[in-house]
Structure formats: structure tokens, C-alpha cells
Length: 305
Image 1 (spheres, one colour):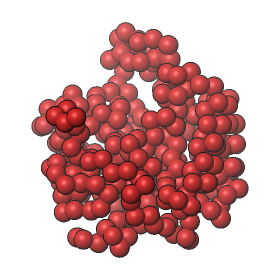
Image 2 (tube, rainbow, N blue to C red; image 1 turned 90 degrees about the vertical axis):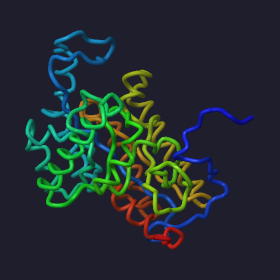
Image 3 (cartoon, rainbow, N blue to C red; image 1 turned 180 degrees about the vertical axis):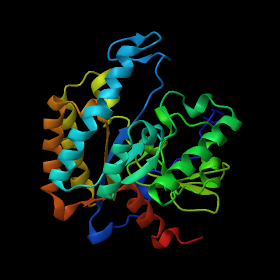
Image 4 (cartoon, rainbow, N blue to C red; image 1 turned 135 degrees about the horizontal axis):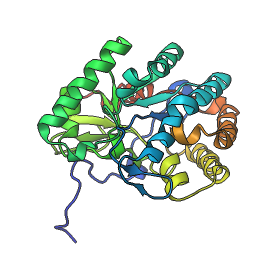
């Protein structure tokens, strides 16, 4: 049947029909760990552990603020112990609210990925002037603070507007994570929209895999998975992707939030996952989204521009 509304930016393209490729070192599985660092506006309500909080949302605000005061530091200690990089998805409000956090990630050499100013207002509810002003502020803040322009973007709440991809290209971003739940490989989406698919065109924006299932917030807060169950699922996902990588080149991703994964009883299970990944170091490329994007963009079949 035809005539149904469709998301035309990403035409259907089955993984079984695509050209396969290798990551650096000849491996077929890449891996990055995404850590969301977020700041919320006090007094505007918000989703709490078990209910919607009315203004001034003190319980919801303080729960999230634990991630900035404590959780992120526990996570940093663990990743230092494991000697693994982090893809840091950060609201720029963190630079003013908790500058020590961003300094710590900068010292590690972690990639900083644009994530709006705060998580209190999705792009999807902004008008064009508001969204453009937000991109101007975020891009300038990240460029000045990190001494390099940001390459990647994730919209707050995974809620971009219809014009977000065009604005990302206009402001110089090289890849976006917003649409990544649809695939296990990088792919190109249209910025107009037309053409598209898994090969670059002059009007394409690169999309990287980003999970909605292996994401601690929907899994452990909304679905109420235990930490043991969630991180066991992550290990099972990693193992199956590694097994099938002989046929399909893939990207393993897990998304964490400092106020969730940074709780001690959850952190012990995150350590279990990281140790498991490191035990397969010869067969997986553990890296950052920026490096994945650069490698994929430079593959021969993406050389049309």
C-alpha cells in the first residue's frame, strides 16, 4: 500500500543489502559509551522517578543534581580505572553551573557533543528564531570552551524540530545522534529532504547509532529494569553484535545519565560491562562518536563529495 505519511529524510535501506566495511584495525564492531550531563531549570516541574512533579519540582531537580555533585565523579573514576574514553553529551549550562565537570572531561580528552543549553525545553517546541539562537549560543560556547568546534549533536529529550538537521549543517556540525535508534550502522539522512540512504550526497547529514533501548533512563526509570538486568542486556547485546559482525559491520552504544548510572548500586554493574568489553579488546574498536564519524565519512564509497 502507498500514500501513508513517511519520514522522508531516511528512506528504507535494509542492512542486508548494504556495502560492508571495516573499522580501524580490521575489526567489524565499533563501540562508544555516551554519558549525558544535564542541567534543569528549577521551578518548572518535571518527570520524577514515579510521578510528574508539580512546580517547583524540588524532588525532581535534586534527584538530577545528584548526577552533577556525585554521580559523574563516580563514573569518571570508573572510566579512569578502565582507561576508556567517553562521548560526553552536555548541556552548555553545565559550564556555568558546574565548570569542574567539564574541566575533568577536557583533561581526559573526552569528546564533547552538543546537547542544547538545558534539558528543560525540547527543540520541538521552539520556534525558528528560538532554535537558531540556541544553536548560536551552544556552538559558540562549546567552541570557546573546548578550543575546537563541536562535531556532534543530540537534541534534548531526543526531540529535534523539523528544521534541526538544516540548522546543524548551517552551524557546521558533522553528525547527529537524534535518528540513531533506527540502525546499527552509520547512515546518511537528507537535509532537504530528498535522496538519502546509506551513501553521502551533497545534501546529507551523517547519523550515528544511538540507543533508545540500551539507555538507562527509559530502561531503569520507566521500564523499571534492575541494574543487573539492564547491564546484562547490554552484555548480551555486545556479544550478539560481536558474533554477527562477521556479516554486518556495526556500532555498539550504551547511553548513560550521571544521575542514574552514577548511583553506587548501579555502578558496580556498569563496571561489569566495561570489563567485558575490555576482555574483547582485540575484536572491537572502543572510541568516540567523532572518530566513528570521521572514519565512516572517509570510506571510499562516501567519497562523492
